[in-house]
Length: 594
Image (cartoon, rainbow, N blue to C red; front, side):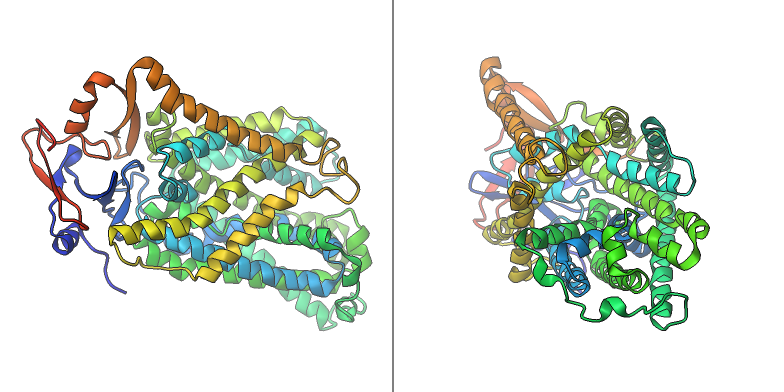
């Protein structure tokens, strides 16, 4: 693999020089019609990041450090993918598929679709190797026009729906399953809040500590599934008290014909969510040394390990538990498995394993989410960018974590159990599916942009068929919520109209569009000013855009004294910025732009 190109390589290839600007940075500017692209290099060893000038500036040196190693990439992925779903999903999969054989086959389908999705993220990350935040960046760059529209829309959606209450509630429920105590609703919420607060504190106090803790919980999680898998093979060998352990595998596809298209589509939705989180490592990519090479070697390994353990864990459950018991039991499948093997008392004690798995999932998801929210803040479209971007006093993303803690705390304590809780979970999923679908299609748009700029291939290119398969799986997630449940329009996850959450999610996106129109067009017209961006540098090394208002009479002067990304030129310094396509040269100095 060739080494990453440097700024001097760029100048030698395209025959241009860089402007010396605010902060002493060197920035390459490529003109493509009315659009300007910036080329910047990070210190993580990645290739030059070429992006639309409206995108958040590259942080040359990551203020969050470079603590994300090969090992950490694997377990950020593993921890995010394996939560508590694998301990309960097998039952719902069996109900939807109708047979053991088809249920197992669906896990293979999920692996293939997830591998396709992983290739999409690989290609997108290879274009922007020094930008953390995952889909925040990829949407920003794929849909850079109208200017700021997608950053504003995604930012508002991220703020409004910035909570993770469901994970914390699930963990609290598992904790109480270890005891004979039946908690009240508020007691469950109190324990959930304590779990959530503990995870947030770990991330705020020290980045290295939070990553080590995540890795440790990831190891425990893998060992848990390995333990269940090995136990399953012991059962199949006839070395336990389980009678006729292969019964579920005789006529394994019996019952498949009893299911319809709705149930099979639901099964695919469940599988998609079970593999969700495979993209978590891309949220911290600017904290990874040699990011593309590192993630290409480790993320597929993590995905494959998880897929194999998903399969073997399901086989273990089907070996230990009769099909009819899985379908009719109100217990979590894993609890039923432990109970049949070790008795009720031991099963309660072993519930600590799903508890630790749930906490690992909360921690890993919060690590990734804090980087996403921070990157949204670095785009400059949220008020008070210093709050979102600063890494002081601990060198951690304090603002994003504190905000998510507050939002999640409200969502844990305020909504009553039942319909309201189910509604909130559904409400989060639909806008996310919209954005991921657009991001996936955006791969083709970014390819076209780079071709026009003459930038050549990046370090990774996904197969077109993989992109299309992944896009189709995401489109299915957009269509499925509109399909009425079998029992009618009031037989969904809540007692009111089944598509209420979907409509509300679309409504939130529409409100974001209305906000964008007033912020970018209506208010500037009424206020006699224009929107511009500037680059701010904060103590601790954080770098961000900040949106500012420039009076109409001052716009020409502003544009003459700032580069396209918003950095101000150094006084008395002249630089030459060239287009590799045309060779046209634009000269800058502190007096004019020609």
